[in-house]
Length: 193
Ligand code: IMP
Ligand code: MG
Image (cartoon, rainbow, N blue to C red):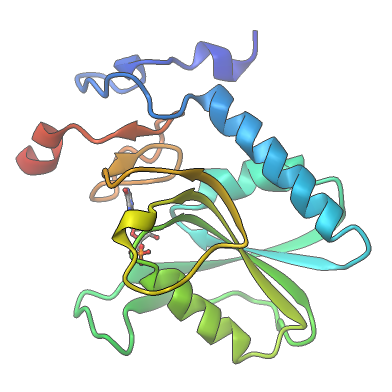
């Protein structure tokens, strides 16, 4: 039995909160990541790839995705947050930028979820301005019903309905990221805290 198998399928991993049946169990997440990893490994088999993770949401996804790749890659991170001012021109605030110069490199941006699409769209434009050889986006979750900006990830794990989800890196007010599975946030948690 692996650690993942013992880590709980229900709400017992987070004391006092019943998340009910996971939307995706840790086993389902790992299986999907291995599919994505195989595709990415094949697509970049003869290229040098720089994988850039968007913190904090992509923390666990990035870590598992990188370990599922069968090619040698470099990695870096950006720490971003939604801009409090909801400024249309700058919807995203860069708390910490990556260290690498991406000019002339094959870059894969790794995010937790594409929801309205504003964040990925903004980050893509920002990175394209820096002159990479190529730029693709990989997300674990895709919530197409909420899209405000026409954008599709090049690699997407699961399509999900218009529900607020937490776990495996995804948060509500910076909590529940450490759930080993992905669950819909119970409504009473959303209103009550
Ligand atoms: P955007 O709306 O596509 O710009 O997504 C902005 C950010 O909102 C994502 O990077 C996530 O961090 C967060 N987000 C969107 N939907 C969810 C969700 O269902 N659960 C947790 N975070 C979410
Ligand atoms: Mg977030």
